[in-house]
Length: 175
Image (tube, rainbow, N blue to C red; front, side, top):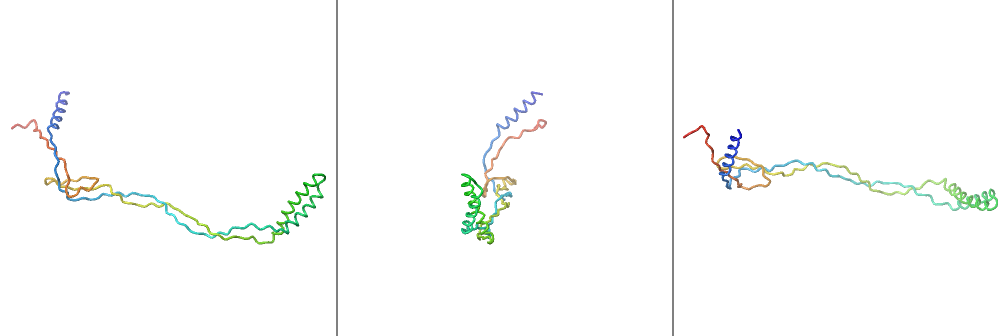
């Protein structure tokens, strides 16, 4: 069995060694570009300007600050003794100034400043693009029709590799 396999392998190798190849031209009958659809994501953005009202901090009311500091200082002076009296007077003056300013501004309406700002909204959209993947080429060589895929358009003629090898007669035929 090993001898039969070895002899078959040698016969195929010998036939391949006897095969000759050459290059010839075939006539191109048609070329059809081949495309594939590809999804390409991209961001689509839009901007718009919106009006916005921001509150403005109230200006200090100096009359209320001074009056509150005086009242707070007097009250603080009544509370403390010794060196604590000075600290209580100072703390009372500060607290009184804050309360006096707050009371003086309490009746005023808050003021607002109008401004504009840009608001940007983005969303992702998918575009479908057709991309060229190659060409289906139909060609004719010695009256036979063939078809193949190629990366480039070959033009009116296509070079083909032609291989010639002897054909073995079957064993049971004799001349």
